[in-house]
Length: 212
Image (cartoon, rainbow, N blue to C red; front, side):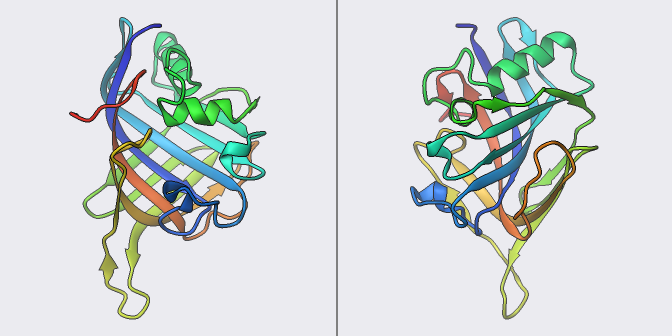
């Protein structure tokens, strides 16, 4: 397998209630799973291909829980990436050169046999983990706005985190709420004020790195 390693950040919005039952081995809030995510890679490589400064995104949708499969997936790679970087990102995000079950991308790809054409688009990702605020823009595909959880009585911002010592996506996630509007081939139906997580990603083909 080609060795790879990446370090960066991720903003994801799914259709589940805040906190996402999937993180706690429970069934999704509405019985099905659909989500968007964007990734900004600060440093990394795929073999000899430098991935520093690249970005990618994805739209995924399953008719039921992810583990039941039959899902759809579409990957988007930022237009600023070179052809070699695009190919490397596609391989990472479809679980190639990755040990079985080692990353969320491996799982998502294995459970999504219906893969749409990979798109090359401008990707804008802004994220402030400390403030739990962020946004994603992929023209013609999706737009996401995210913010902190707020107290329903006082309106004060509320901070919550998820700690997964053995997770295949992250170790610690800051939790917020977000809304996504899709305009591409995969249309999400229930991503309004729903679960958001903002994380640092430190990963290889063997899984999440504990010492980032």
